[in-house]
Length: 331
Image 1 (cartoon, rainbow, N blue to C red):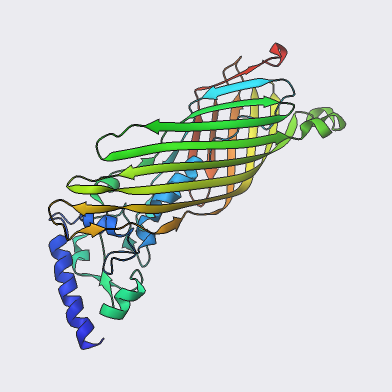
Image 2 (cartoon, helix red, strand yellow; image 1 turned 90 degrees about the vertical axis):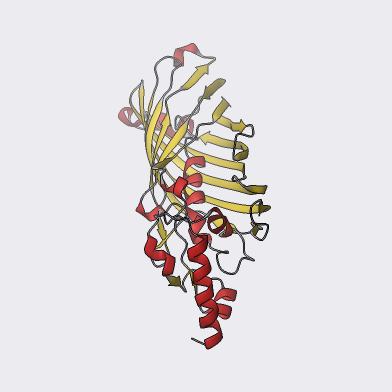
């Protein structure tokens, strides 16, 4: 290592130890600087914040279907589905075992340096940069979840789904909104009558779902706001079979994509030199998704329980879900 970078790195580590909370957790400035490409020491660390979009994408891309079949008659649906995504050890580490924003508060990291998470500018100037510990509040979370309102209507085997949620400014949460729409079409009516009697309860459909969500956050002792804009998309084939009329077993195979774009500006009210300009885009665990669900039909009450795997496990719960058809014989 060159002499100048070595001296600069020594000063950097001294600054990092001073900025870190006394109990070893990352300071607010360190954690949020990960969203800022221009911050040479702590910034441009997509791996540090990636678990946020990884968990959000799993939540947003779930709970689109309540059945593989879509009837010919008009049907209306309404409910409050949500997914439960456990936060695992994989969410708490990245790179060469460094803590994510959900990670631990290992005090040994106060004096550690890293090359595998540094920006090119930091490597050029200092040869390395300090490891940043996890955020104390996020480290305490054991799972991710939030509900949303979902409405759907179907006719002639096609189904339109709308979902949304809006929260007013509450404490540090300055903005939260979600809007999504989905389209489903079932193909069973083309082939079910040609199948053996035992196989006729089989149905197949295609489901497309898209979500857009905005989250605004302003920590205590800061002015301005961190804005996170999330887009999530999924395309799935849904295979369903009804062993009895009141129960349907569903298998979902498909693809999902999600990304999170950060923007805004934050300035510390205690130290105006602590200025953060969020500007990175982080992708989730995009790729193959697999799901198993069981849907029940009890009159107009249609609860759905299931399991999804998209690089990590999630549990889907669609308990408060209701479906009303214009053909009462199908209830």
